[in-house]
Image (cartoon, rainbow, N blue to C red):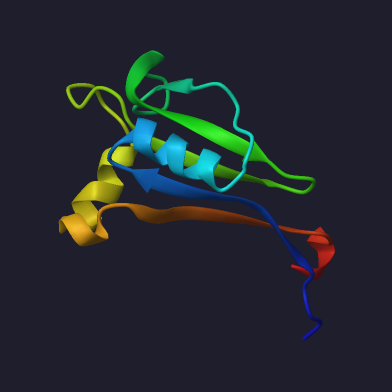
Length: 108
């Protein structure tokens, strides 16, 4: 089997307090995008709606880091799934997603 060259497209950190998460990224010296509020449809074909989550991104020369969190717990958000998976406070913030991309689709 040929080895596959993979690149990290992005990594996402889900936090309960987006403001505090943003501040932590800034303290690390990262420059962040403005807050982006999430929108989408819950199911294919359903209407687009405002979700209860948002993010900031640190754009890197290749890929990016994302800090995402809830902004309105009353609204739908796929970020809620992260908190349901890790219900203990000590485990509630952390790496929630990563995306790899292959350089050679034929090798996959």
